[in-house]
Image (cartoon, rainbow, N blue to C red; front, side, top):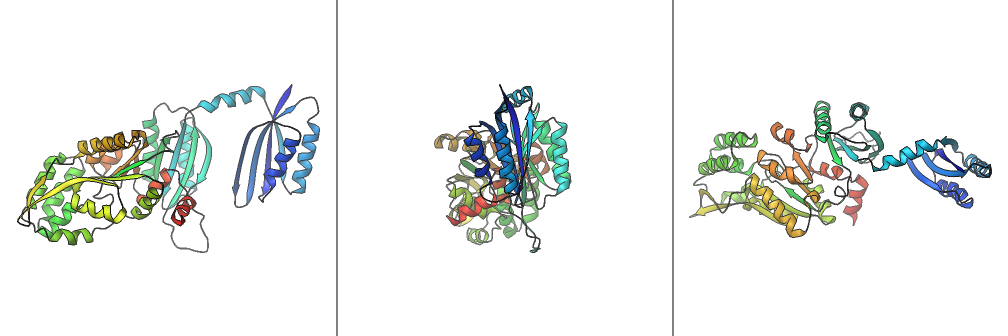
Length: 408
């Protein structure tokens, strides 16, 4: 007969603690059923779940562990575990798991209290909490651009949409982004990312920039806004706006391209993804001229957008080929994934407008980025408080991981 004992060790962290304690268990051939360790500010918490004989022969194990822990200045506690409780814990290992990521300029106790309360109300249990962003100096008072914390939760979710909706609403009130993802193999194996361009990779709508030069800015901007809110069919709105640009001189395009405002975090995000071997594409309802400009700047693999048509150096008010609307973006995403042998669950799609919803809905990780409320409500994930590099934390990356990639 044997009994199961949980050994809890706490104290100041330093090299050799785990080695010293497990060496004793190894000497007595004690089976370790589970192990976990965490350290916060040099304070160690180590847990060992072990199986010991009931015949009294375990006494030397306890004695040696106590002496070794005392000699190292550690506190150690032994807790017997009921056999039925242990078996119930084993059965729970098949329960669904989800990752909840908090992302914002600052995350404090109120954010964690509110989020964890929602988790508890839904009958879920928090297994792990990890800070993804770097440590914060209390002497250097410069504002920190990002803060991210990841919670791993366990338990059945009857309706994932309800959980997402509750956390999304809470995030909007607290001015943080909250993402919920299934903790499955695909989350750890994304391979393709497809970006919208206008108001996603760049902080403007190129067609509005062209309209400003042509002197029809207000008219085009009004149509653009209606389309982004989903009030107008994209193709109809696109043709209306293009007609207003008829006669614009081709020479102005170069200047507009050079002035494109790059979205905060785009450089860091794309450089990191490229280092990791991601395939990167732009799927845009904008124009190839500007998408190809970004392609050269970032080293993007593929570009699909609308090709402007010119006659005698002037815009005709038309585009050549099929218009890239929402349906076309989704079709292109599928085509690229199929060609690369990538499952849709391994695809990330990022966009801000109604015409991005089709591709956001089929991608494994579809992110509405600083999107209109109409789009945010329908997307499964959204980022509204930080830049594009916030996506790295949704992938579970830590600041130190990203820093290491930059050094390679």
